[in-house]
Image (tube, rainbow, N blue to C red):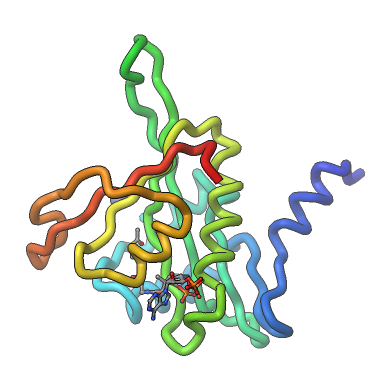
Length: 177
Ligand code: ACO
Ligand code: ZN
């Protein structure tokens, strides 16, 4: 029987943007579509098993946007990493944004924002203390999006990308809105 909590989660995971666009959790048979969007929109590509392991381990924060034909037009995925805390011998969880992309023809309609806000709520269920990500220093648009979510530039990572470009390491307290 469905509890109130489950109902809430279901609603949260099926969000309609406009009439035909849906944001929901990624399923196994969405992975090919996710990979297609990734390869079209981002130079950082990953092997299938990498996506599969993110989906196996952190399914609640792996979301897709789909069009009227149920085709994937955007995705977001996170992983949770354990890091030693500064002030004790305990470990704390850090949410790491692995990748987000929206197909070019669907951009600037709030899909990226909806993917990010709902995946942040989902990843925070892992008792996260901070949220982190890397972004190309030239990726002005993605940086704007992250700043909208209160991520701050923490440092630069030299030569982070295979083509030699530097990354900004951006960080946000998990409890910030
Ligand atoms: N110019 C300036 N700012 C922009 C633009 C633009 N053309 N497009 C988006 N933004 C910024 C704005 O701040 C915007 O907020 P606003 O509309 O309130 O001003 C904000 O981004 C969010 O816009 P959305 O419509 O919600 O985002 P969209 O669906 O267009 O997706 C995304 C944004 C995912 C960054 C998209 O541009 C994309 O797929 N880019 C290519 C892939 C990429 O760079 N991904 C991030 C790599 S880093 C990583 O994955 C950790
Ligand atoms: Zn990263």
